[in-house]
Length: 457
Ligand SMILES: [Zn+2]
Image 1: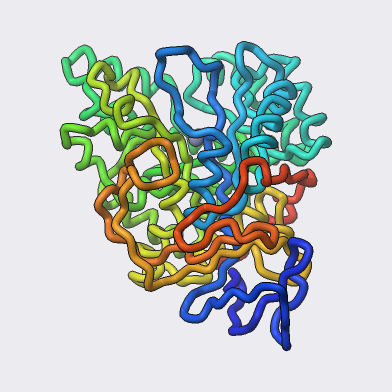
Image 2 (image 1 turned 135 degrees about the vertical axis):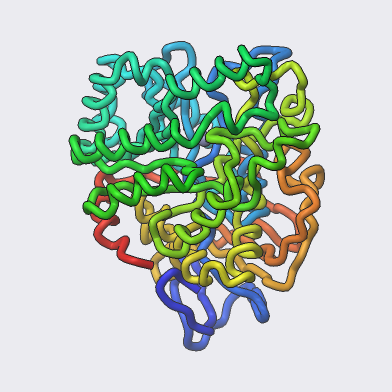
């Protein structure tokens, strides 16, 4: 099954690549996929397997690294990840990239790319972008809600223009920082600053305002933008208006927004569900599902950012300090299959496009990744639609030890995961050594040509 076609045939693999499809085949090993679906491996371009700042003893931080995170990926059918790489302590972007390349080289069991994060758009950091693109790192991430974004907005726009000219895709976290800080301080002043009020502390108006600006920056600079984890109908409407004008505005959503609403924040352990933007309302959820089907949302990325349950439910947090992010690498594909494909909300071909083919195209990895074709890497998931499992985060590969979906009955799990021809998941076991993953050099500008291929689903 690919995003464009399906067939019942044997797939021949040699030297880590697909070498034959159909016809008669014989091999050293035969994997029986009867009753299951053979899909291209998941391409999750939004994960956090390295810390945003150096670890401080005694202070909670994200709990997965490239080793444990890539095991979670494998168990969930994801064979390529894109990691957000933050400079530490005013490190240059190149230093940060070198640091994470070394960590991933020894830890990652799946293939990977890095997205350098431009935390502060000073002249030196911005000047690094063309060199990073030339070295094969053709994406850059910015957080619109950071104070540095607003205070250096002229440099930010110049940086995004340069990124586009260098063939980079610009990833944007779209929330307006000033509006978010205003909402949070109002709630705190009114004595309503607990994490239960996380949703009103980051209203969809703040997300919409940021998306409007992202679209305007795209229009002004001509640089393609990729809006990470879009959460609301209001923000989607803004992105769609840009898309309707033919602008290269690409949209990712994340699993959290497809399955949960702000209602769960009334639970005593609301901290479990904190991410930003926050959970929205059921009308937003329905809008996002329709957008997955109609093509105005292009990809689903996990935004895997795992904390321990203890750190997430620590009662000292408030709306300004709550720890953001959840573990989602192992659950992303099975849940989207179970809740999307099985229910008929999205066709199987669209599922493949959302979690594999389109991210591979946008990030310059296609056709090596994102499809099953002769010459492509043999990254395959044998997904068994009958296999069901009740989610229990404590039994999963992430060190988070819990899942935001604990107790959900999910149908459709990998029977095998194959990465460059290696069987890395079989019989419920991850069998991949750390460090077997490879960094993927990307050509600049591939997303601009990819845009032309991103016709209606
Ligand atoms: Zn993220």
